[in-house]
Image (cartoon, rainbow, N blue to C red):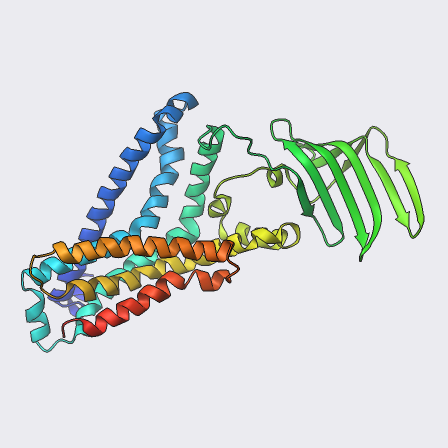
Length: 368
């Protein structure tokens, strides 16, 4: 393995890759430790009130918290790390001999993009496979221990389409006893109402996986004729809905693996089309967000490869400013997708497209 690496990676490439990955890993670890310390100080009361053991907090909560923030911060930390060690190399006049040895600037970029590819692959795998699982651990722990406040987590006045011709309405839902109140079910044939059922309560039987409709009152409509039927004190039925459909869960889509996310898209296309932009944005973001590693690496190298008076302070300051700018643009892109009517696939590319243009401009101005 060492022979292959030495054959295809010259000394300077191995030197830059070591600097890149070493600085990135060290900086990321420092930021994660700081983030965990601040989070512990913020949620110490929640941990004490929950009665959870240290092991449960470490595995269930921080087992989801740490991977999420590592993945979220990795492109930005990668950007700062590239600026830091590249500006240090420029300040120590290490880059000038490289470019003076007939190596083009594009050739100088090769070890950077080899390193960025390693970070990209890890980030892509985490986004698609690991983070949904760890997010589920964290969100479940938060919901079970009251991290999201004492407000009512259930949805009220829910209108839902459960198949092509069937619509339901539920005024409110009690998740502790899996009971909904003021239930209405309507079945249509095209645009004509054929059946309407009204009930005071509806209870979910988790063992039978059926809904018990209490005191249902059903009307069948056939043109101008209407037939009213009392179905007794209780009626068991299978409906394509679950108690979780009436419970609000923060960041619930981030905790869904890809197959579950795709199934949710199919289901919500009928039930709640208004939430589809959020789901599609989350789906596309998992694949597009890791690409920011390449964009920010390009900007970092082009920005810091020139030796400037004052050392690494100026490039690092500009890098921190651009990090905040990237976060702001990313948040605006989210708003554009969810509330602005912009297609999620277009919105998710906005940060990388804008900063990609900036990176190309800086590349043209970089020392050759």
